[in-house]
Length: 429
Ligand code: IMP
View 1: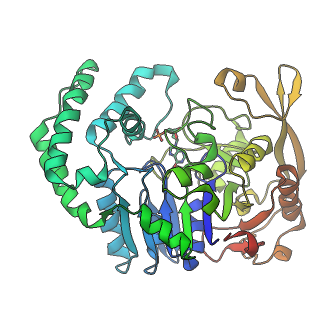
View 2 (view 1 turned 90 degrees about the vertical axis):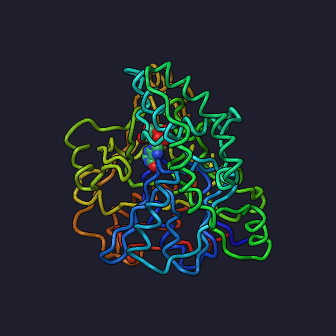
View 3 (view 1 turned 135 degrees about the vertical axis):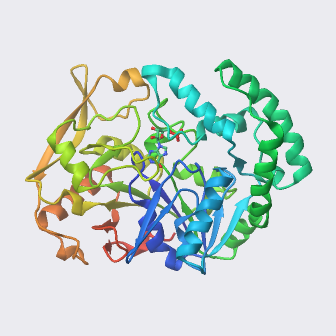
């Protein structure tokens, strides 16, 4: 079955955008299934740098139908700006379809995201301030406005009136002035008019595509450890970036998923607050950040950097029932004499290999490291397994062995060509 889910195997920012771009040459559909414009996917094609927050990276190919699935929360301002910006750089984009079941992000969501973060004081989550949590809260509370309602003016008018009355009471609790209904409706109705040609009930279209053997790629955003249920709660996003989220967020059933590729960096990074046992608060961490240009695509924040955590990665392989790993940014580790990676945790004097659940348990975790010889030089010219330094190959083999998951693809630079496919059989199911 030629369906493929691409997920972030760590805390997001694993360079999924590049991988989706590379594999989209063969795809008929590329489908985002969770999150919103909190995501940031960078794709480099020659001298052009594309930064996507909502558009699936596959949209750069005219033959691809790009879909924003039911599990997403979509900010129309951000999406329309992104469409205009990308079209100006590449006029022949693929078709875009937005599920009528996806939820709309409004200014009150962004305001509440910021006001709630401020109120959390020292316990801030470190959100992207894009209104993602409040938009998903509305969905779960069953007060959200869906795309299908948004693009129908009388329905939108009624729903917005109903919801804004409550939101203005909430804003007042934070001492914020109310939002004016008429001006909000007029502004967003104009966005809705532009969005309308893209909005459709697209679940049947995707189910048919799968039945007809077309190639459907599900493009994950964020990463496994930011999953609402399986991540480091409460320092997580409000959706399901794991492979199971591809089913929830698109209406495709689990038996229709052919392959799952989990993308991980050869080290680890995290943006925002929360547990990160292998974080390096020293010169080595700074060196990884500078060598890897580890600054957020969405917020520009410096990313927290550290060594690979294989205990966590093994958990990720299982949660996602991964067919294979895609190990990225191997070039960034060039020049380190020794490479370290955690293979156990020490918890209150005992060794553990399990992924803790609660924050107070994470606070007790100390990583136990193994180390291996590093490699030097510029490895971005490697095009085959044999071209890689033997130390880099040993590192990849150790990751595979520990996680019991084969490495399917290696990435050794940002360009499409800087990719080594080791197991083409694992790419499409
Ligand atoms: P939110 O998704 O904006 O609510 O933020 C919740 C947490 O997820 C914060 O720690 C963010 O930094 C993190 N986060 C959200 N989206 C991404 C992403 O695309 N990459 C990395 N971290 C993210």
